[in-house]
Length: 287
Image (cartoon, rainbow, N blue to C red; front, side, top):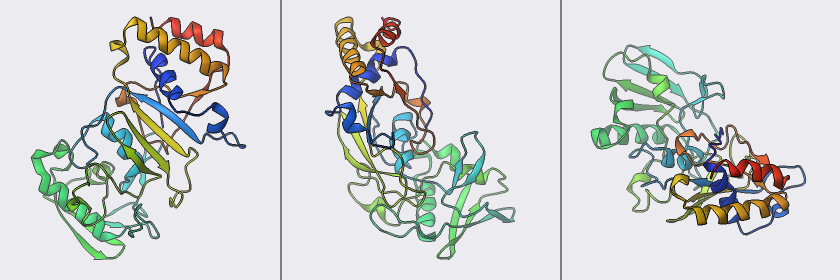
């Protein structure tokens, strides 16, 4: 996951980690990986429905819960995700995807062609009422050939179809019919949702993830508002907490502008701040 560190985000990021309720050693493991981190976010998602919204706050959570047929490498290249290989173009309007075997959703449901068909049909049904319509306006339908083979059909020639499948999150067949679907997402990704309320979303590592357990056990995403809206007294309070955390050898993840976020499983970075004077110098730039 890539994080930017805008200067105004430093105080917010330090404060958010301080809310975790445990000291630095409780968030560490013997091999140096992090068992728990907290990220400060400048916005709360309006929904966790992966097919309705398209905003940074929604993606920051759902990109770690749901997956797509195609994925991106750290340098931006297109690569198979839930697909086992690159899709095959059968004709001008049909692309065939072979699916990855042995993948399960967080509720134990097997990932298969039915899930892909259900996800594509739902996106078509949502149509212009969804914020992602422009990405998928060429979709015409999908057909399950067998358990691990699905044909995606377009309204006309669409050479960008594989790239579009980087955006379409796959849900279990029938999942959208659940009344709590928009608040209790179930995907195949490296993290599953622990809790979600007005103040924080908490994710936990998917121990059964097909790509291997992610290196961070618990990720808390705190919705704290834009740093520019924090008044001087509040900034002073954040400053004091940051200095305390620095003395505790805490690790900080700084993030306020949600559009800079990517999936936690892809590129996660954190910065140790053990020098309180250095941290104070950095924090002075935020006032």
